[in-house]
Length: 326
Length: 273
Image (tube, rainbow over all chains, first blue to last red; front, side, top):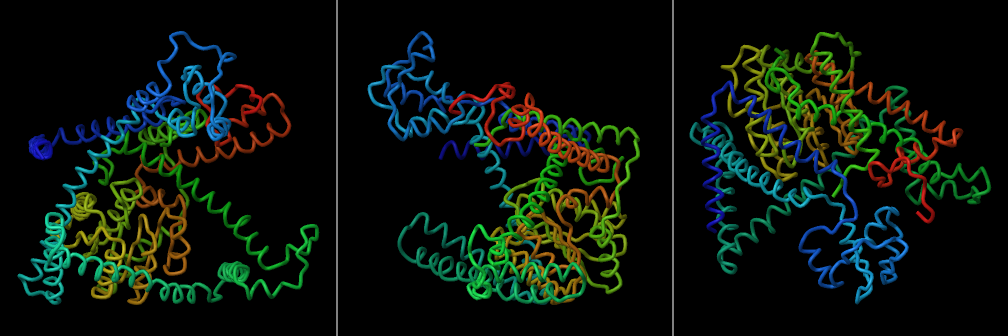
């Protein structure tokens, strides 16, 4: 609790100091912080990893289990570590260089055979920065927590204004504010009093109402799919016709009635005619036509994301992020 | 945890150098040209229609768990739409899914209004947080669409199953719709429901196309050069692995997805490996 309070206090002090930064220094400050934060993730990603013991705790466990490491390096030809069948299989799946590293790290007179779990631990693909990722993630979570407060404030202030000014539909805004307050009370109350009215209210609001409303919204999609599909499949152009034919073939290939239509064609792998069965045509469209196109799109998107990330990370934009270029 | 393999390190480094060099050369004044993209030209058409009809515009940056590249890119596109709409005095509204994005979205849209010289027209109510629950957000956006009867909707960002709920509701009120998402599974839904869809890397080209800023144009040309380079590598690699024995292993390693440590690219394959 003390640490939580201290963290909150430090966060608030840091925020206060940030508000004092003069305007002309804000952009260089943001650029520096972005560059440093990005460097952390980039270095962690690019630093070589290998078959290393994941962290000190795991290393201690393994040393305790297998005894101290030999002081002199063991020649590869002398490695005689006992392995359980699963561990052997796992080790054989590794790239040879990694497998050799795992074996070099182990004492040759291990009292117990090496298990698959041990191999897993020893081949954790980590470098010295990897364990720090959790800390970086915690910092992000703290910032996110502050942001949730901002979000709730935005929502509440918009709807309080609606109520105060009696704008049309202000009753909906009042219901929303009441729902926020009730849900928060029920959930926080349940954290402290496990049984009783808070738990009942939380169950009613969350499990009884919200989950079902969520499910209802999800099921409505089925109706929207039908109406969107109807519009999409109207034959208006050559492209729409190709789309319609391809979609019909894929759909027919995936349902029993469609498969029954071409059941008379022999299902013999050596026969060319087999390719004309609807299920095979459908699979061909999915695997040979659709899948490569999607992969090509994904590749283009990947390169685009890389370019945008580089621009942001290196602060290559002139002017602030979304402003006109100076 | 994912880490770079040797080939990934070399390729990423090379790609980054090409992109950064092109951006820098564009910043130094080199002129680059990009072709016309129909989906992006439709953005002006949609804003124009909203102005004619005297109804508002909805902007959505989709669902994002944090502040990510996809959402920032979507915001950049929305900023251009907002600036365009503000110039003609049309109201834009943007419901936000992720509260961390809220201050950035508010800042971006109010900047866009200021750029258009209409800072006074910006209302803080226009950019608002709705919910970070997928279907609660979808229901909220659908409700806004039905109440406000938007003339145009712009759906850019990460979308999942809720994409169709939003797009179909906008279709019901007769809104002209422009959508773009890197989520390839949602593109077919947008194609079915929206008037114009920005597909694939056009999503990242949008800001360059709309603003014609040298930095963004340079970045786009850099991306294309990288793609040409990779395509050439694939062709050369295929030819080499098929016909030139000494290069077989190098290209085999570079183009494989195996975890080859840096510095081991030229190693001969090991027996039993």
